[in-house]
View 1 (tube, rainbow, N blue to C red):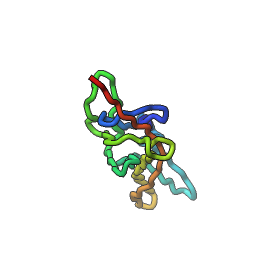
View 2 (view 1 turned 60 degrees about the horizontal axis):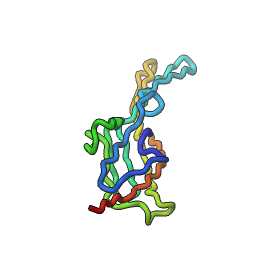
View 3 (view 1 turned 90 degrees about the horizontal axis):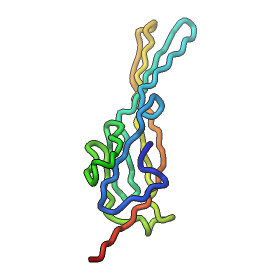
View 4 (view 1 turned 90 degrees about the vertical axis):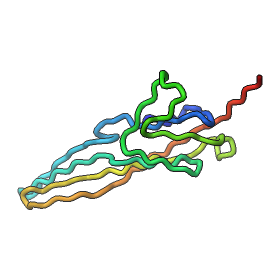
Length: 139
């Protein structure tokens, strides 16, 4: 996952954009074939959703890889995969929210010689932490 960054610091009330850098191993599609006894099975896997447990009691479900943030977008919310922390993480162990991103990989397989095939889902979880601070301005 590209964001949230482990070394990053986030701010209460500011949008956090989450995304994965798409590749065959991070979001798919990834295709592989194997042959045994004259039967070839081909499987293609792709991520169909990512469930982000944000560590603050909320979850965000994203249906795609998300949109990488660009500085020119300022304080805009992510159009497809984002979160807004409403409190700082200083009371959490280590001063950081501990979350997970769980990707659901849908695998479609075929065995043409057997006139067979199907679909199943596998999940993979990646942990992350997010340091979220308050910014206070005195006028």
